[in-house]
Length: 448
Ligand code: AMP
Image (cartoon, rainbow, N blue to C red):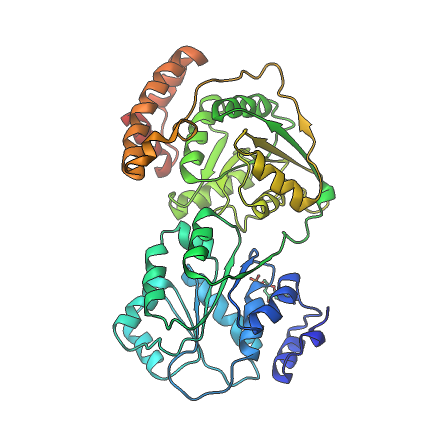
């Protein structure tokens, strides 16, 4: 498909020509008409796929010139960097159009922004907090918003912006088009869509530039968490083969839990990233993984978005993602630049349906391997694997209290199981924390 087939207006065509783009990217091709039709849309695409223009082009094409002061399009993004980036992208394609684009974000003088808003604008790009502050101050009127775009909604929810988003929905006109982009599908994203979107069309684009032929895929059926840990321990002990390994887990708590387990055996070789870690801690973890200081990185789907690390030898899916697109995004981290990559998928009995969905999406079956005999099958279960009695009451609070007690017992048990506990205790006690993050982590460990 060419840009010509998108029937762009002449000013847009000229701007695209100036940029030197030859043809629309897949997400742009798929989004253009659907977004132009005014329907609610959910696009699953990562940064770098051209998603900003995927919504920018149809929005600009259908936005008539107006001198009214209040914005008609609102784009919400999670970070100030993204505000700047999105505004720049809009300015590039709106080069020959008379349209007013403004970016606002927190941490800067709100009064300056109020003055800018008062001058009138068409498209507002904002972080949720600052947008809300401007709206309650009444300088910013949202009654004319016709289109709402939420970009990187998975990150937004992972950073805890759900409440702010819902508050913003409340003050927007009910009749509007909702357009949402997310790199990954998560339960939170799904829930948000179901609560606030009307029958959205879903567009999904697999990671581009990652031919599946470069990636060998295998899978294991494994009964539970601890058996998965045993298998990972077994595999990772072959350090030459498992040279740079990215381990995916579905949520933060699981990431921490797995990190704790792997640290026992591979002390100083692992790092972990998820949204409860500080930005510095995350950056350091990624750097240590990238430069080979650590060969194992544990990550959640959302935090691993945009990770572009060379030479990852293996992607291990410690769990089977509920949303098959996430599997595609995960394995696309290996097998880059024509190099061969390996992807392993672990599935419990409960995860078989998710596995089938993945295989259906790829239209292929992932070859299954038998668990090596040396891998011990554990019968111990983590709380999520037990009966769900606890969740009937107050899921979050009770969950945590039970978690603590449960862990205390587990630590005790482990001491007899794993051997070498004295050395581990001494190491933990006297080791000098390498970083603040490590220090906090050790503090937490000692408390238990
Ligand atoms: P995004 O996914 O929106 O962050 O875009 C990634 C980069 O791709 C940006 O620098 C865009 O300028 C560029 N880009 C967007 N659309 C195209 C296209 N059709 N052809 C080439 N580059 C593009």
